[in-house]
Amino acid sequence: MITEKIISNAPYAASAVTVIAGFTVRDWGVIIGVILTMITVVVNWVYKHRQDQRESALFYQKISKHFKHKDN
Image (cartoon, rainbow, N blue to C red; front, side, top):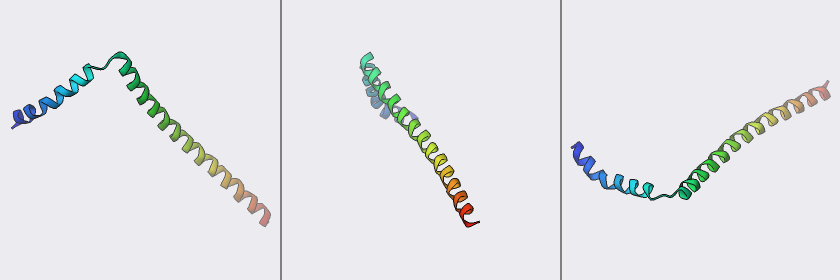
């Protein structure tokens, strides 16, 4: 049973190894560059989202203090 799975998946593994082995240094550079760019975009989005949340919270605190001052 296990050997059947190994035998049936062997061509896929061999194809993947062949493709990966065929990459040049330039290809790897492009792949790594694209991956790092995507990671940078996600990290920047997360930090910008957190900054927006902090700034919104401060804004609403200032507004609520302003209106409490006006009511008194």
